[in-house]
Length: 161
Image (cartoon, rainbow, N blue to C red):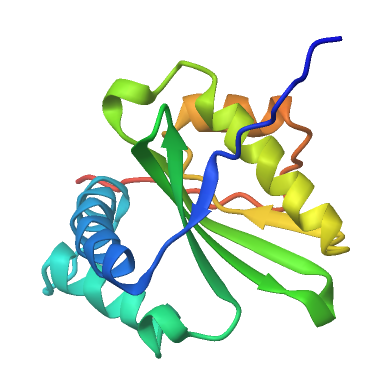
């Protein structure tokens, strides 16, 4: 009889890891805002990213309902997860699943999402929600294959004279 040991991919962050993560997240989010903001704004994308993240995390690492995980593969941190779980609403929102470039397209994202689903089911969470930018076709395909449904669509049109 073969003993199968299930290795967890998700390991809760400590506060020092969180601080490193938030610096990285802010930089990456600023780039995402630059690519996906379709309006003229007189504030830098970095400042907007910093304000948005601070708004979501008013108490930083200790903000109620927010959870942060390192994604571990072969004893290395290969990515991060930021999750908000409101048990009284039986609802969770995935703010971010991020995998470092070298670890993408290897099935890790799918395994992380399955582990998150299992974690949430064990906590009796009924609704698992997320946002994905329309340009992120790889992530959209992953979420579709995992059974997520579209709840709304933002659209834009650039008007040029």
